[in-house]
Length: 136
Image 1: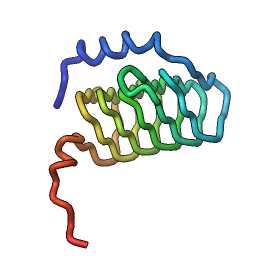
Image 2 (image 1 turned 90 degrees about the vertical axis):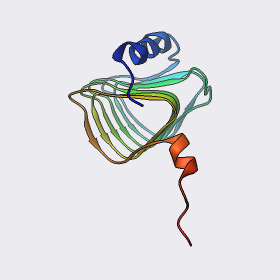
Image 3 (image 1 turned 180 degrees about the vertical axis):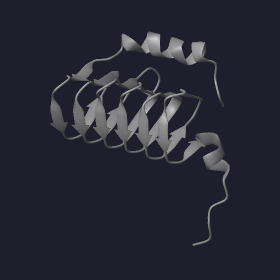
């Protein structure tokens, strides 16, 4: 489902106040992050991000931010100049304006900006569940 810019932007604005963990610009962190509300990566992370609060959590990767790992969160935003090299599982919405290399499973809305650079598969979770499984 492609959504209007205003709907996803409103999710972004509402969720910004919920960020409780930050990897600052210039900082490099190696390891997994598990947070209750939200994570913002201004620096570099080598590891996975999991948001426990599946109703209102967010992961934001702004310009200059780099993540090399997988993300599980209701809302994921990769801003222009941000980089994610890993998979996303987002129950609510995804906004892609930066560079994304990996597979994306999303449950609600997806917004792809004009400057987004994407290499991978995008799949709605409802459709994924209804797909026939290959014979093994």
